[in-house]
Length: 384
Ligand SMILES: NC(=O)c1ccc[n+]([C@@H]2O[C@H](COP(=O)([O-])OP(=O)(O)OC[C@H]3O[C@@H](n4cnc5c(N)ncnc54)[C@H](OP(=O)(O)O)[C@@H]3O)[C@@H](O)[C@H]2O)c1
Image 1 (cartoon, rainbow, N blue to C red):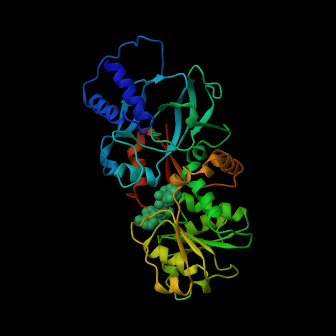
Image 2: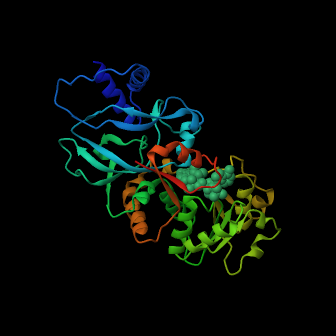
Image 3: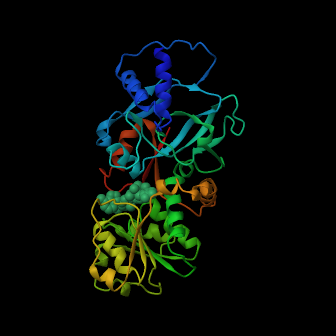
């Protein structure tokens, strides 16, 4: 009985604790298992294929991610007839993963939980009725799904999307949360034509780098704002190589007429803000009459202040975007096609962004970098 409870509870955990009346029971059982001394697993009475044991980043409570996460060994779980067992290859640490562990993200798994929300893996084994996937295939959870920071995951076949194995592993691991956000925000708010312009802050983020490149691919100019830093010219140069037309540090924009800094770029009708505070006001300064600013992140944790004149004389619109909400709309049935398109761009070298692959054993160093404790760092991608 103990092994059955362990199997069921861990399965619930690996599946992201996704709702259902038995969730409380599962989590109570799981808590007991995680805190009780190891027990001997007994062989199940019926035939079942089991996953290998898994190494996972687990948190038992919400709080500071560097304090509440720990790497644990999880025992094998049953691979049922519709399930696919995936050996994870890589998964990123995104700001929203951190916010979920902190307990400040609106949608998050019940604790105890395994961290992570996107990633890529190789099919290790399939349940008896699974025909569309075979061992060796590369898959991503699509839409993304909780619990990707572990070496083996067992989930229903419907969770997994088979991708082209020629995709670079780090791009396959990161294709959804940030590139898809960039694509949707460019297409869903203001109709843009070749020759138009957009303005954004947080241009060094993965979303920001994707916006620059997808915009450039459509002939759209980008005006980019970055935080001040030593040797900012190096970062500016990197972004220009990706296709950025203009890159400014925040202090460069402490002038009355920012538009005077632009040469032949038209005033943008669309702006993106993932920082807040003064960096959001700088985006607003560039926007033309009737333009829209879309807020999708709040990295500075500071509120957005909008001048009265922005509303009265420019009639600006302030909107928001949240991928998780978009993924629950009808439009999301196109999600897998969009991911294939973005991975095609990555394979062709038309979509690039800075990442650092980190061995799983160095998870906590990667986490500290992702938390900003070591200054500005590239996206941390765990290699399992
Ligand atoms: N709404 C949605 O659906 C959605 C989807 C995807 C992402 N996002 C959000 O988009 C943002 C970027 O995500 P990402 O994964 O692309 O980022 P990322 O690659 O992890 O990069 C982090 C970015 O945040 C900046 N940053 C970090 N701390 C900051 C601070 N205290 N003040 C100002 N800027 C700071 C960094 O700038 P430096 O280079 O100067 O360090 C860098 O540009 C995040 O807020 C994330 O939550 C939202």
